[in-house]
Amino acid sequence: MGEQVVVKWLTPPVPLPHPTPEVFAHLVEAGFKQTAPPYAALTRADGDRELLLALVTGYLPEATDGWEWCADEAAAGRTGFAPALGELAAGLHLALATLPGAPPSGADLSGRAGTALRDALGLTTGDDGDWLARHAHRLRAELAPLDSPVTGPLIRVHGDLHVGQILRWRDGYAVIDFDGNPTLTGADPYQPAARDVAQLTTSLQHVAQVAIKRRGTAPADAARWAAGARAAMLDAYRAHLARHDRAGLLDETLIRPFEIEQECRELIYAARHLPRWRYAPMGVLRTWYHEETP
Image (cartoon, helix red, strand yellow):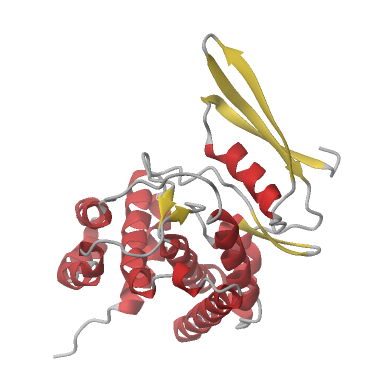
């Protein structure tokens, strides 16, 4: 509105409590500024309920969606942006880790991931489905670390942290959209930080696939770019936590299994909502698991 504010209407209105107003208030209190400044939440009474109608945030001049600006970087082979993403994600997690609340115990991370793999196998058809079935044993093996109880901290996570939620604007980068994952109902808001980290790293891999399909980038160049961007992002994330004496916030052993689970969820999303998207997670998986040569 007038290049001053952005009003996000929820259609239909959503009963409170809703995660975003609480997270916005806490990020302001924690001094985290790498987001669109939150201004207001509009609500109305509906009998004995209160409904969230809209969220109002500041307008970020010259903002570009992550699927656009990051694809440009991939096509050009540039990874200089990646440390800024790592620092942003680490700063966000440091702020969210102080959000009051009692995280539940005994989350079934293994069961959730196993269900995602099973559903991806059942919903992915054609040659892609055949390929996925041949590699199912390797995918299951990668999920094995989730069988052990989580011993690290559980924090309030973003829940849908991918490059599309990171705007590049006139003054830097900003993370948006704290509504949670719209395709995953009942997700626990308290998770290992590695959950968000894995979604961010896999989204960089998806950007590489977008660059191949839409920008004509050579697959080998895209793979090198994705690996370099991932490494630089993770290095900056770790360094930022270490500077704040919170290195233990990230359990490195969970990144890979969460990445596998995320690709399964991307395949489920493609099958149920956006079939043309299947090329991205399948392209990533085929990059990770090359066919064996006799």
